[in-house]
Amino acid sequence: MQTLKEAKVGSTVSVVKLHGEGAVKRRIMDMGITKGCEVYIRKVAPLGDPVEVTVRGYELSLRKADAEMIEVK
Image 1 (cartoon, one colour):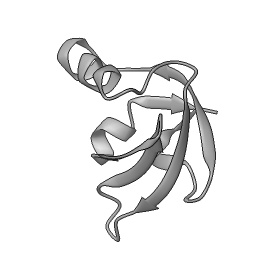
Image 2 (image 1 turned 90 degrees about the vertical axis):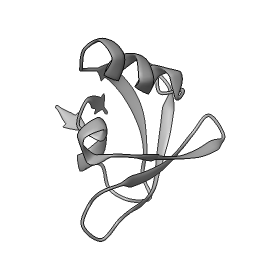
Image 3 (image 1 turned 180 degrees about the horizontal axis):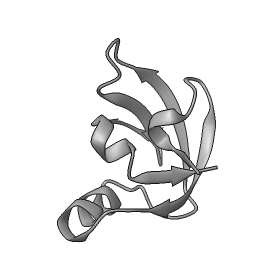
């Protein structure tokens, strides 16, 4: 299992599954990250938090804790 946090900068990955419960999962889905969507990893901050991605045509910054909940391939 690879998470969005572990994905390499410059790669495009596909979301397989969202882990997490209730409000946290809902917030991730509201940002446009759903099962099957493509996510491009733009850059990662020097200490690994946050991760900047492009999803559905817009840029998004995710906390490391949120990126760990997104399983990708």
